[in-house]
Each structure stands twice: as structure tokens, then as C-alpha cells.
Image (tube, rainbow, N blue to C red; front, side, top):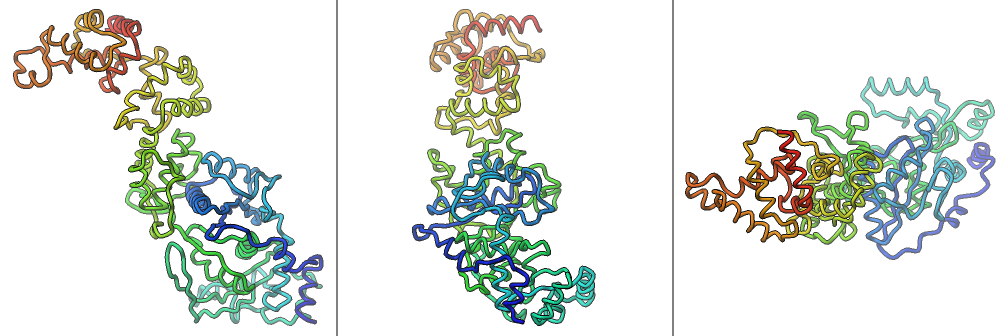
Length: 544
């Protein structure tokens, strides 16, 4: 019996050889330097913020190089797969405008010429490549039982040895083909292991695009490459898929750095060119002085749905992630007010080697900058979409008079230094509820306000169509006529005056809004108009 006989025994239904797939999935015809990369999640639930970071990073590098970004679903671990898992992933990423050139569109539909892009549908392809290794004596069936494997692990732990199947522990590594076939005929369960050509006492060097040159011991462990159900392990599927889909770059979390010797060895065993690897650091959290990884179980901000529900724009989240991907992005963004993320060129050289603290406060500040750059029309449209999902009652108020609302949103917006007080869509209601009669519910306190002075000013001096200079000159004239001074004169001789013009402004602000701090008073009064102002003065009189 030969290794070929053994391969036929294990895979009697596999008729193609690997050359068939090499011919079917030809190298891509792309410009030099174009990056082909992927996002390859397991359909186990929601997309977390760390996965969003990795996918956004991969998307950005592919797009700026005029390359390909594809979605591959790694669902060979059937125990962890959840219902509609693929759709949930696609929906979460679509919310962040992360789109794919190829890949799974849903659990039923795929797009592209290098599929299937769902691993559970690629079983025959994987088995063809595994059969090739068995034929060449580079892989073998391993009949170790769970009890034997547990016993090996216990011994290795006891004597502080490396954990795994290697050397004397690889019991079936050199089993003759005829003996292996007998065991298979006896229905003894087995998996397929790689017959590792490596030596733990030799070193390999590889260049990581983020971490530069790395050095490891060679892999000498006979890793499983096919499970009992006939599906490949993660490591082997990674090899086949990235080779046949012609992946040029693998961008992933640094928890996979330790797997690099295994992955490089698999490419070496087949004589394939390995993709370039870039291992990015995890997102960290300061938990009462303890720095730890952001946790799906402990931290609500780990789920990308958290930001949607909070009303933080997806674009603002991406802007924040961009500051994590490249350390020079934030300065560039602040200096280029007419640019967006797509105009920035990311580089692997600027990707940090150390983990980044996930800072919600910094995210809020970036979000404020993002909001400050929107036009009133953009802000109105985006806020309506948010309210439709999360606050339908206020949406009715907000959209009742579109022009009125847009005027409110435009307060201190079209100027050199626009206001930066909106961090999330829900802030708009908190900031401007007082501008709408339906949500104006002041809780006045006794502020020693001269209401007759206010009534007199509105009746004789206020003009709703006045420009800002005219408005200021009029209120200054009124103040001086009633024993108040301009600020400079008041500071020089406070005993000569009742107060200063600012005091009158603060009285107006409080009566008309019920607040002591608001955006620009002139803009508020202009938008409210004289009729609404007079009604609010009457309301104040009735409540005090």
C-alpha cells in the first residue's frame, strides 16, 4: 500500500487535484501594488468594535490601492454559528459604510469569481488540498482518542513541556499506509494532521508590516488540518482560502501573531507564496486603573450597535478608529476641514505596535468636530433618520417646520469657529428643546428679573429682522437709557450704574429660554420672532 492508496481510501469522492483549482482561480489582474485583503469573521453574533477596527483598516488599505476587499465567512466551527449570523455581520458593517467588492451578500447569495466565500461550502476544495498532502506523505490520519490526548497534555503540563502532538507524542506520524487503512476499515475515528517538517530548535524570521522583523522557533507540532466531520481546521482553511482567493495582505489582531509560524509553514509545504501579514494591536480599556482588553462580555461599548443607539454618527466612529490606525490622522483631519477619510493615505509604518486605550471622551470630541462641519441640511437629514428610530415623538416636533428647525441647527454653524456642543444626535433635543413650543417647559426660579424692563425693550427696541450689529447697538442704547452701562464703563465705575448690558441680555435669555446658558442670544431671538417672544414673556409672568 502507498500513500496514494491511503489518500484514495480517505477521500474516495475527491476526483480533482489541486491543479484544477489553481487553474480555476487564476491570479488577479490588478495594477502593481494593489492590495487584496479580506474581513473573515465567524457568524457568531454582533460585530464588535475591535472587529470593526480590523475590517475598516483592511477596507481602507484595499480601497486606496485600487485593490479588492472581500468578505469571507469562516463558519466551519458549527457549534458557535448563530442564526442569521451572516446577515447580522453585513448589516453592522453596512451601517458604517464598509462595503465589499466580493463575498457573501447573505447566507443565500454571494458575489465574485473566487467563491464560494462561505467556508462550509468549500469542503470539497479543502479536502482536495488535504488529499494532496496525504498522497505526498506530508499529512496522516491520527487515531489518538480524547483520553489519549488528555493523558499527553497532562504529562506535558506535569513536566513543563510544550503542549501538542510532536516527536514521541505523534504516535501515528509514521504509521504505514496499510496499517492506517486497516484502522479506517475498522471504523476507528480519526483526524488528519500535518506531518510538520519543522524543528523547534531552528529559528524562522518573518517581516510583519506593523511589527517589522519577528523571529520564532519553527513549528514542529503536527497540527490538525481536518476534523472528524471532514471540515478543515481554521489554520488549514486560512491557507487554502487566502491562496486561492489571491489574498496579498492579511490584516488581523495581534492574538494571531503566535500562529504565524504555522501559517507560513503551511504555505511553505505547498510551495505557495504567503501573503504579507500586518498584526494590529487590540483595543484596551482602563478599568479603574487596570488596563485590559475591551471585552464583549463586560463592556457595552464593545458592540457597534452601542454607538448607533447612542446616536454617535458612524462616520465619527470611523474617524476615531482612523486615529487609532494611523497616529498622524487626527492632526491631518483637524487641519483639513474640507477633507474626509477617503482623502487620507494610510500607511503600515504609522500603525501603532502597542494597544490603544479606547477613549469614549476622545470619541465624543471627534464626534463634536464632525458635527460642527456638517451643513444644516446634512445635520437635519441625519437627525431625522435617528429620531425615526429612537424618538418618534420628538421627530414630529422636529419636522413640523423644516425651515424653522434648520435655522435652529444653523446657529453659530456658518462661521470660522463653529460651535462644538453636539456629540451625538440625542444632544440636539437636550440643547434645543427650549426652541419648540411643544417641548418648552421652563422651571423658573426667582432671578430678580425686571420683567417690565424686558417688556419695554421688546416693545420699543427689538426688531426681528435686524442684523446682529443693529441688534447689539439697539440693546446697548436701551441699556444706557435705563441706567445700565457698556461693560467697560461698568467695570471702571460700577457704583454709577444699575448694571451692564450683559445683565439685560441674561435676563432676556432666562425669560425666553428658561436657561442661563444657551447658544447665541441674537440668533435665538431672531428665530423665535416677536410673537413667540411675547408669548414667552407672558408665560414667565404667569409662572412667577
